[in-house]
Amino acid sequence: MKQFTFVVAFCFLTLTSFAQDWVKSYIGYNYIFRSLDFPGGQSSVGYAGGQSSTYMGDGIVIKTIDGGATWQSLWTGVDKGIEGAAFPDLMNGYVCGWSAYFAKTTDGGITWTTQYPGSGVEYYTDVAFKDVNNGIVASSTGDIWITSNGGTTWIATNGVPGSVYKLAWAGGDTYFLNTLMGDILNRQITDLPGLCRIMAPVSWPVSISMIQK
Image 1: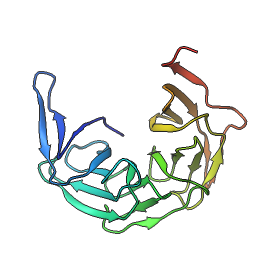
Image 2 (image 1 turned 60 degrees about the vertical axis):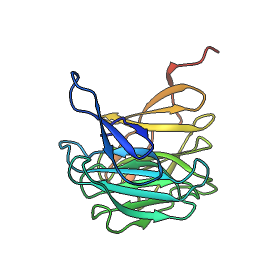
Image 3 (image 1 turned 90 degrees about the vertical axis):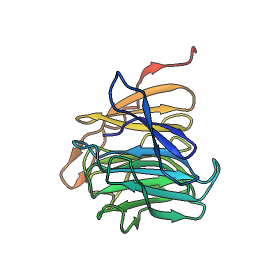
């Protein structure tokens, strides 16, 4: 499950309890980290993805195995700045970002396999997985793809107007997203064994609107 974080220069801020202050976790990498995920049920192993600049920067994925005390670089890529990361368990994870880069690891980040959810993509904005097989990825143009077999195949859904900013799995078959226009939307995505299905032609309904229209 995704967790929120503040990213400040070379450090992450971690809140250990409501009565304490945020504690800096110095990571030692001069990147803008846009994504952070700790697989559920533990607080030791986590992954973060980032980029050297806000527009088509070089990408990086880092990992901690000691609750953020130390971090190690797993992967770097030229012009492949990372915008989103999802790790449904300790070993399986997905990252996405600029230059239409999307990749999967099954060994905790040691090796990465490139996948191609969509075509004509400038960059992917975020990815969310409810388990190792079922997930969703979005692009800067509002296009959305889903998979039910760990990314072996992807199916396009009806997207949303504007750019998707971030995605989140909320439990069950429900996913949420927010757009750069300030809208928060949700949708149930139903999967069948071995086949990715959506409840087409239902659109993403707006659940909360941050902008007066």
